[in-house]
View 1 (cartoon, rainbow, N blue to C red):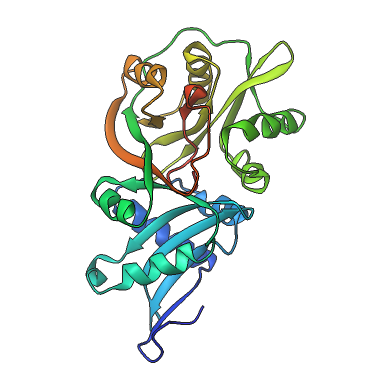
View 2 (cartoon, helix red, strand yellow; view 1 turned 45 degrees about the vertical axis):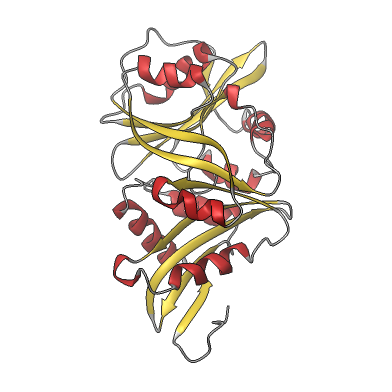
Length: 284
């Protein structure tokens, strides 16, 4: 992607795998605590969706706009290197990112200090997401309905997920539900009724997504996911789901971080009452 200002040494181009790793290091430095192996699955969702701004040969800023088809995309990893802020690089990244999906709905999870800027750019608040973190209290004996997701169960989990996201995301999920992550489904009457994923992060572990019909099912899934894991566990909860907030508090988790889920374009109708943990702040 050529610079709109020829001769100034600035270029914006698709990230290499190593550059995506650098962007995730920047995200970790901002306190976002990405997963240890997020990069491969992020690229599986949309290999062209991750952009790095270079000043000469030096990476100076990042943004992602992951396209899920032609109608929906999700913006994330919008970071300018701290020593390069205030120099207009963020605007150039922003324009390049949004240029990947000019006519569709775009979602994002905005940090508190940027929410006003996103609103001025046409994004409308849908709800808050709150990250809860801590060491979960034990929640009783294992629920026999909670089972590992194997190859035979995977198609049913993929089909179940479709209701919880604005567009198909099978390429991403086939990666996300493998690669050493913990994946559990709740199977009732022979059908998938919920599922969740846990992954190792720079600090502790993170659960996402966590989709379930009610708090009891979500609690059973969460217990199956985190059993035996050392250290803290984080769960990103949509605030309108009061049952999810109460579950996190009951398990002894505390709020540590928040974002605003915002959309430019028509906001999708998603089942927040059954969303006990979103998948990621970066990809939606």
